[in-house]
Image (cartoon, rainbow, N blue to C red; front, side, top):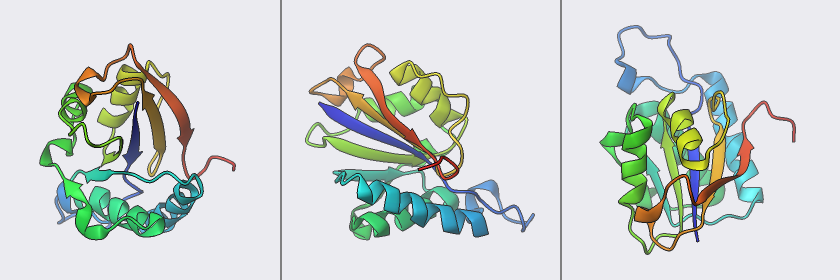
Length: 164
């Protein structure tokens, strides 16, 4: 059994038009939502084996904030440039290439790829994973390369504006 958490970056700022999309930081709401979602995840008492993030500023900052809330070592966070604006099939390839020693992995990235990926993988019907939204999926597999829509299902879907 493998568990995958798919996490969209928190709300980002558009205040500085000179910044590239890759370098956009979190805005005020993003800086509030990320620790709040980290606390919600901490209360679920799930210990990830790996946090894997897009290296884009907003995704990696979200990852670091949530890591701090759950007590995950900052120096163990990994990045994958291929997660930056990845499409669903590309995210699936990244998941299928994960080390089988890992049982619980959290991936931080971007829409529309993340929403499309969750809908593809778990046959979910999610219109949009909002900023800082989390979709946890259970995969009834022993090896990540077996991950597909025949063996995945959504455990929960949470996001900042969802009532507790």
